[in-house]
Length: 218
Image (cartoon, rainbow, N blue to C red; front, top):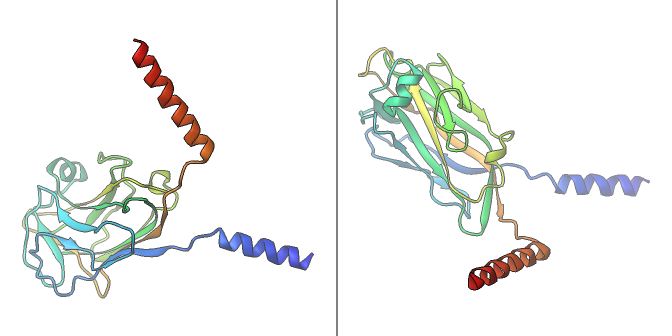
């Protein structure tokens, strides 16, 4: 009985995949006005992940931050004005990823964005579909838990994420991603993409053959 219990525990443990660091950013050397911010740490079998700005934002100098200005007061206006930071997550060919969490360090000036909202292309970029809305958080570290979102698990195609900044009292106020040490980190797992079972492949083959015959007869 004891051996059986131990065996079951080993099997259960083996079936649980612990999250890895898929990508991370440390922006200590940034001047603030860089056009993009590629992740300086990337797990294998993933395409490079790079942060850029939406069309509504402009660059602004600020040491140690991927910075921007031009933010709006209301989230609805930030969405319509394209006031966001964006990055796309995509596995290399033959692989899939599942996302666990996103941790971001936010910093802003007194008149810059005090609130942030995270969206993905899975749910869409309209108000009400945000993964997380961090209202009136100021300069802080925020975490989005992604494990419970089905569309972010076992993914083989690209997914775009957007972080909208809002709550700015002036468009000249600045804000962005900045902290101490690692400024942003995306955690999850990467694995070989599932291969269809032989029976499934056979059904697909028969379906394609039947379609070809039907087209030939017509």
